[in-house]
Length: 264
Image (cartoon, rainbow, N blue to C red; front, side):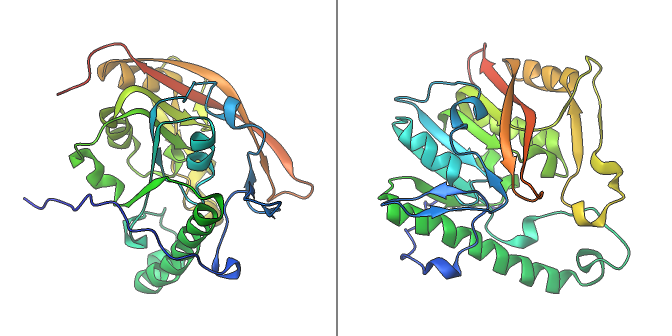
């Protein structure tokens, strides 16, 4: 059986800022800031993660991108923070559309997307060096993380479940890695006690081919109850700079707390 290598990444050298692609606004160090990129969560981190106290905890940030949540957890007093992100673009699934690069020219799409992914990683390492951070990093396909023997007090997945083509096993993986709490932050949740999921955006918008599913509250409750967790929903906000003017968007954050002993 293939066993992946879970060796933590050796820190990248400090990249040039113009080589970086930042996904979130960030206050870096010595007055340097990143403004007017996709999302701005500055000043909202505590509510974004549902008010969970991270002080003294080990924290895993899944899908770290530019690292805002990982660095914020570190600043909030977490004892140890580890950030995980994709290794290669070929790990990503997209909703197929006739004529789209993903559907018709997959190899080129992967190569182009790997360039974007490298820019994201560079933004993380740029901030990591500037902040003199101690966050550890692992690049690994999410589908392999169930094999990881590491465990963390708190696992954070910010605005990512809706971008996973098969979200139920992904949620299982998050729960498996968490000793105490899973935070699925700022994600759409259907307000229904019924157990179902539905397509986001009707799957009819090629520009949103990365948005797969919305899950109902009842389905989240059932998945987490099966895994020994109880959940609550709290409101979270983030400023989206993709609108003109920027739009403050509110979505729920799911806090899942373990009520049964974790698996050995």
